[in-house]
Length: 316
Image 1: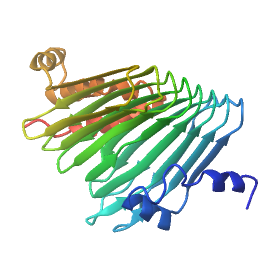
Image 2 (image 1 turned 90 degrees about the horizontal axis):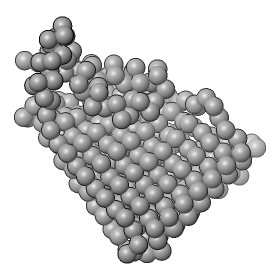
Image 3 (image 1 turned 90 degrees about the vertical axis):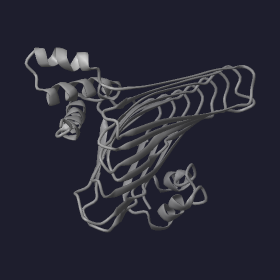
Image 4 (image 1 turned 180 degrees about the vertical axis):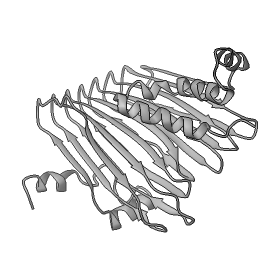
């Protein structure tokens, strides 16, 4: 019931169907709560909309659903935050996000996830972008014991584009498998992925990128950049690119870098009065500025605080 009931029925679980994988099927069966946003044609929201999800029960699951439709020529910045207290039993988060970006519209979807270390975070996110539309993903992944996050964008319309900017921090006991997928369908589409991954204390960080260019997607352009920072020899960082190009008229690029914190940089900051721990935390925060600079200032401050907390005790 309600003014937008027919719209919800039209779009709900059409991008992500229960047949996609077992966690989508579980979500479709037991989903509860979430967010629905519709931005009418030509409406531009100057202030971001925000939502926050928190799991407060131990041994439980959270299955919220986010459905956003940005109509023709409209624009929206939507920010989503997630967290949970620490319990001594495992919890499951299997939410779902469906984003529809209509002709000439723009949607920026930002999420900062700070789950506790007992969480299995298996979220499914997908966007459908029509002619001249733009989807921008801003992602900060902190916390959770195991995380699998691969936002997918379908560039259906001509001249549509996607940008994905993300940072992942894997600490002790964490295995975070993140990345993004884009499917170029329309002509003259473009996509760009810019990610940073940080691993410490034996944490495992994996970045997977998937670029698919369909046969009729002439003039498609895609670039993928992944930089990894390992803070000790026990940690692990992997980059796994995949490209499926079905047309000759496409320009595709991929680059990956991996490294450690420069001792010279740490020495320089310590010579200016900083402790070694603070110096390393500042360097890591700077490494992750691809995400923080895209967030409103209060979220950028919070993200940098999360990095400092993750870095505490990393010396000795």
